[in-house]
Image (cartoon, rainbow, N blue to C red; front, side):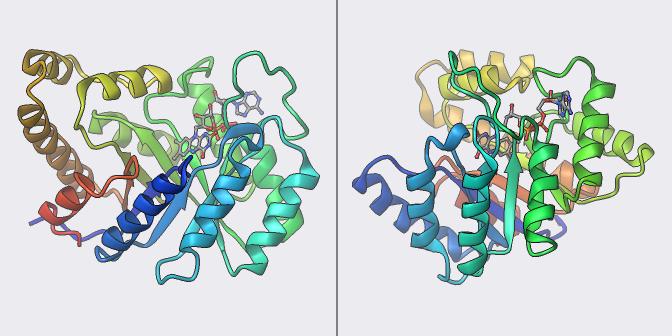
Length: 278
Ligand code: FAD
């Protein structure tokens, strides 16, 4: 039987009123699975600022804590300080602190070019009020010069004040275990939650993976291609692959799981239920 570990769910802020309405239903449903928190993404340079705030105010105070994402690249300290003060006044005590990715063509990095600068700034501005989550990349951040440098940078984020981390999605559990081993050698022992991407649609998955530097192992890619338009078979196969991945991660010591929900109930509900984590 799988050991029971805490779960969390990630949403992105909807663009339309209909999307917001739908997300309220998703939130209500997934809340029944008793997650530790819901996180809401934030577009780099403040591009989703109003929509992220709207989603936060929809869900904050409705039982499960919310954790706003906050990215720093292309933004300035005054605007970030405003958000930190607002979140604190709303009783929010967890932030996912990220660098973000600037849209192509935008060149100014802003006053806080890296996530470690943001973490330092949050600690300077808000002291110990927030629990700070940061991003981790078991398969290496796509812009990193080397794995060694990337994990050193990760350790710097932790030394700047991060409490825990959430990974980019991946399908190779060995990459996660190796990452944990290597950061431990740097004296970093914070909880690192694997980010879990459900598999439901081959072309979307390949697009996300290409955009984030995540590897889809050949045996998964080939199988998905072989199913073509047979979405039922893709979903059944995807479910089996992700359940097995989560089981291995939990058995190997992953402290919790963070689901990239893509604002859907299924397959997140099914995964959590079949893993016995609800
Ligand atoms: P950093 O930790 O700053 O690292 C970025 C790169 O710079 C790495 O290659 C690192 O090795 C290097 N680096 C770090 N510090 C230094 C330094 N001092 N000098 C030189 N190089 C350095 N993006 C959004 O826009 N909004 C979101 O809401 C969002 N949510 C996310 C949630 C999770 C769980 C994850 C894993 C990613 C999320 N992202 C989000 C994407 C993320 O912003 C991008 O992957 C971005 O490219 C890197 O962000 P980071 O916080 O890891 O940056």
